[in-house]
Image 1 (spheres, helix red, strand yellow):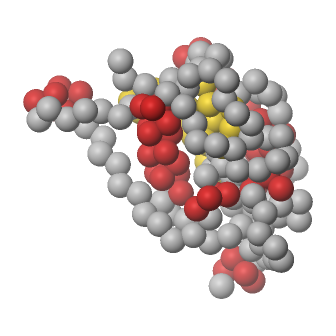
Image 2 (cartoon, one colour; image 1 turned 90 degrees about the vertical axis):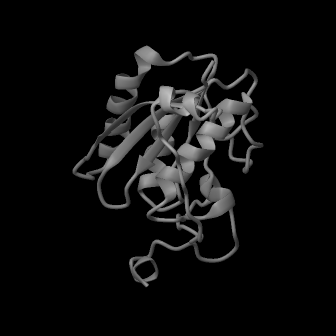
Image 3 (tube, rainbow, N blue to C red; image 1 turned 90 degrees about the horizontal axis):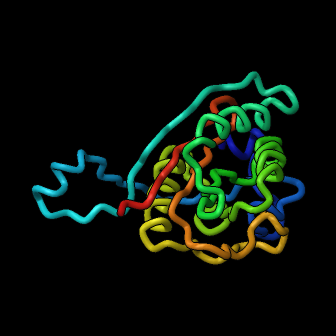
Amino acid sequence: MRYVFGGHMLAGEFRPVWERHAGGAVLGSFGAFLVIEASDTARERAARPFARLTTVVSDRSQRKAGDVTAQLRRLWDQLAPRLDPAHVAVISGATGVEPATSEERAFLADHPDVAVRAPASYFGLGPEPQFLMNVAIAALAVSHGRLFPPADQSGVERPAEDAVTQAVVTSVGQWRGEGMALVEAVG
């Protein structure tokens, strides 16, 4: 009810996240389970890692116009020294809720060569497990070296030309709280 009463739900016909011009989320029901352990412990039990969670950065903005975009730029700058521009992708936490989605889209426009995917176009919004699910999706993507197909025709998502060995997972809270996680292939 809080999403409906707050005006955060998609009204009308379904559209992928980046094509929701009037904004709005579609609720999904899912969970996420990640095993994060030391590499020596995993080797002892002969487990094969999917990926490495290298870095997590977060902060919060005041949410005046442009604040989320600026905050995402600052967080990206913290990760940038570790990124391989030819092999990085973004797994976006965008859900279609405005103005957060438009602000993230403005940030993504700074990186036109980076392939982007918004899993909420497929799964909807799962408020609590959204970020963890996207980290798991990023781990699968880098372990396979490729992304799943684009979900929309807006131009934000397009085919990934090169192998994906790194994924930056974004998270933008609906009130406050921005974050990014860098997930890398193990090799």
